[in-house]
Amino acid sequence: MDTTAVISTIVGLSLSSVAMAQEVGQPGRAPAGAPTESVDAECVPPQAPAQLFITKPLEPALPVCAARNLCSKSVAETYNLAILNYNRAITRSNEVSGDYVASLNDYARDAGRYANCEIDRLNRMTVD
Image 1 (tube, one colour):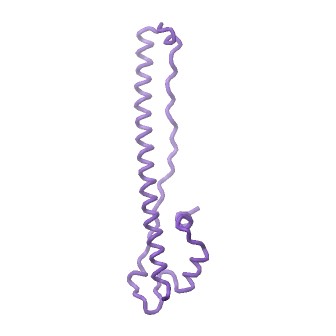
Image 2 (cartoon, one colour; image 1 turned 60 degrees about the vertical axis):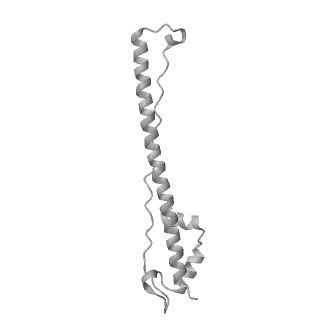
Image 3 (cartoon, rainbow, N blue to C red; image 1 turned 180 degrees about the horizontal axis):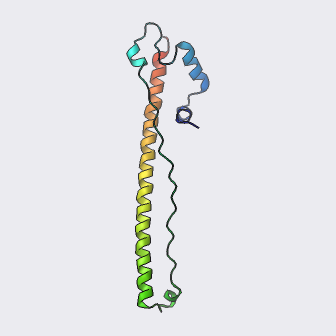
């Protein structure tokens, strides 16, 4: 589904209301006697961000020897290093996810602005 269709659905515009608006005047053209500078203003649909696909980092397995507190220093250090790397990977994954959510919020805001622009444009096209 393209951006315009999604936004039309969100706003609640039906194809019939768009068709009625087109019957009143040609899209982008003012009805006779209407000011043209505001009607000809182009509403630009926002570009959706690319979908994000990430895989959550796998938590390192707890060494068997840790259950009885029998691990050697080297095994404990290796495990601690693996946990440190895991925590860094989780932090980075959360940052990437947060950036994606922010871009989706920007897109939603811009989609609302676009929808309002289209509604205003259609309203200016109607004959009183």
